[in-house]
Each structure stands twice: as C-alpha cells, then as structure tokens.
Image (cartoon, rainbow, N blue to C red):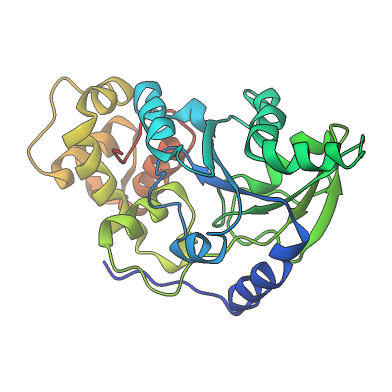
Length: 280
C-alpha cells in the first residue's frame, strides 16, 4: 500500500520551524503514544537537534501501559526527556513544568545568577497531524485558543499562547514528511488517523489493521466483537465481525465500507482496548 501525503503548507511549516527555533528555549514534540516511532517526524529530529526537547507521548490512555513505560525510558536521554500524557483529560499535565525546568536547569541557573527572578520559558510545540497538539495547548492555556479537530490539518498558522505557569507556547501546524520509506510506519500513521482517510483505500486499511490485531492483540478482537475464535485470514475475521455488527447489504453480501469505517473508528477511540502498535 503506497501512502504519500505532503500538502504544500507543510513545506512552509518546515521553513518556519527552522526560522523560529532561535526564539524558543525548548521544543515540545507531541507524539501518539500508540505509535511513538511512526509519529516521530525525522525532519523534526534534524531541525531541532540542538535544542532541549520534551517528547510528550499523548493519548497514553489508549495504550499498553507497560510498553509506554518502556518507551519513556527508551526516549529519555541526553537533552531529551519523555513523559506520558492524556491531554484530553489533563492526566499528566502537572508534570510538564517540572520536566521543562529540568531540561533548562543550567540555563535558568545562569539567568538567576544574573539577578533575573521571573523567568518565562518559551516553547515551540511541534508534531505530525492529529497527535493532539491543539488539545495539549488548550489544556495548558485552560481555554480553547487553538483550533481542535479529529482530523489532520486543522492548525494552519503559527501563534503564541500564554499560560499561567510562566510558559509561552508557539503553536505550529502538523507536518509530515514527503515520503514514507517504511510501509509499517505509513500504515501505523494511517491506522491512527494522522493521514486523511479520504486518500486511503479504507477497506484495505481495515484489513491490515485486523491482520495486525489478530497477531498482537487477538483477545482484544475477540472480546470487542464477541468472537469465540479467530479465523486464519483477516478477511475471514472481517466477515465475522461484519455479520456480528449487521453490516450486510441486499443478498446477504458484506458491506465492507461500513465495517471498515466502524473498525477504524473503534480502534482510534480505544474501544478495542489499550493497544500499542510499536515496541521500543
């Protein structure tokens, strides 16, 4: 399945990130905790390599908790720190300020030595589409300043947001990279909704998701769709799930589009259970 999606505004965003890095103290990179590797834009690694970075594994409430802990340990090294967050409910939000202060400990010590008492931390928030950047910013600012949506591509322009904890946030639009060399990365992004469904073959995508889940989380599939046993092929399992859900058209045929939409929506909403698609 070849997947490429790189709207023109993303080229502009990369340029803006590079230009604006000098204005901030630290970069906060939001990733999807279900796919910490696939939701890491390699361009951001290159652009922001000289800045302290806080990696936020968002949507951690949807993940396999033990794997999230392993990811945090794996990603936290050097001038990079990782934490888990559920920005929708605000779980973990209190750990943001201490984590930023820890990353900027030496810089803040130098500023205090010069007599500066009130220190404002300026932060650039980056990440690929649909990982929850705007929801995170709104929770930090405690109001709906940034636009939010359950589809990629909602935030289109740079804006500064003040918070009550001495942190100013620079929002940036979500940016993907031009070509996905690894099909598994592309699929993981598509499964979680980082790539627009409109450009996907939704039925093939749902089959690929079933294939992944029947291998790694078979009990979740059986429990959610009340299946006694799983069949060998993803198509057989999709057919069983479709019949359980009444996704049938005239003549008893399966409505594959409808069951595909249901499967993807329920996975993205955490209804199939706590799932992490990647290992550290």
